[in-house]
Image (cartoon, rainbow, N blue to C red):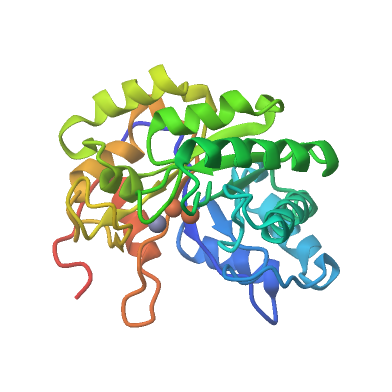
Length: 294
Ligand code: FE
Ligand code: FE
Ligand code: ZN
């Protein structure tokens, strides 16, 4: 196999008793050389102080095992919605949570925070984009870090914004601190949003480059999807068991234009067991094992 520059890992936990040290051990147990984590529960913004999370111990293991810390990914909690300002209290809470997550990301020594662009909740995508860009600028002017936010491409459920490359581009265009903005491309989400990576991966990557610019691409979420193109559902599936299939996702991982970009699996657990060791092995080697889930 040729010596490619591939950073492949998965979502990992951050839980007692080992916290960050446990996250790093979990990633290494999957054969990963990068990973993504939430700095607390994904559904809320209650957060343990960084001093309790065994960050030094985790970072020591990261450095010993040769993981490139600049490729690690933090995911912001889902409760943030800065794409709607009809409720000033919620809008302000979202901005405060973004600031605190940026600082926590820096506290782990990480450089990239993935953020869902949110839902306009009836005010229309254009207003949603304005609201989000304003919130990002407020956060970037107060957080005091150099952490970048990667806006995740969404599948188009409900009132989500950030469904098309043009919308993501519009968010970046409206933000003053463009140097701190990038994009997270999720293969399940863009399929569900209507981009045909199954039949025309090169064309979709070229379109992304034209509309947004590949230099903005900071992370790829590698997921199969339970639904056909354009379904607007967002239901992840294990690699090879969904509509996209192994060959397409394998081409994503090994695509020369995506070289060096961290690739993160967020596929479902199987009977309470993480599938990531097997999925990483198959995607790294390029060799699929039929019925690997059985
Ligand atoms: Fe996400
Ligand atoms: Fe994702
Ligand atoms: Zn998703």
